[in-house]
Image 1 (cartoon, helix red, strand yellow):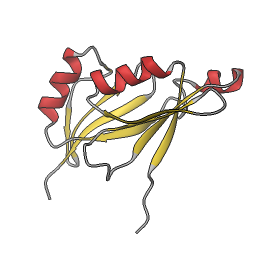
Image 2 (cartoon, helix red, strand yellow):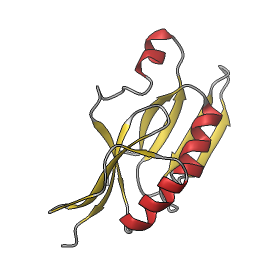
Image 3 (cartoon, helix red, strand yellow):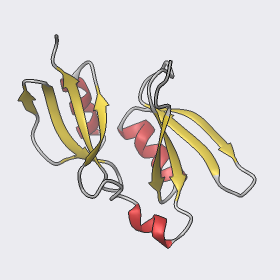
Image 4 (cartoon, rainbow, N blue to C red):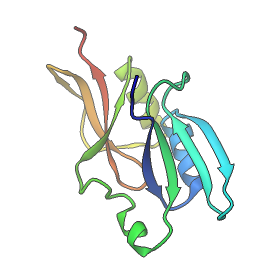
Length: 131
């Protein structure tokens, strides 16, 4: 079996990013370990089972990396958070201060709304349509 295990997301501050992903989006902190170079290995995951793709939160190391924070996909939606209950998660995220860029839409492929993370990266909150 093969799968994408982690996707790196360049962040400005580890603790600020951990708070956003765990508190506002409801992810779980899977790993937070110091590294010999002074950085940290920080992984957050949207689920509880560890079977999905996690985010490796990586602190920017130089100006080039800092310039990519919040614009890692050129302004496009670059991340897709699937849910089994769109209304529940949308309401919880709104109450946690997550900024949605549009009202929820109901498309043939499912219920969806675009939101931004704390740095401005665009995400879809998506409940896929039932088969």
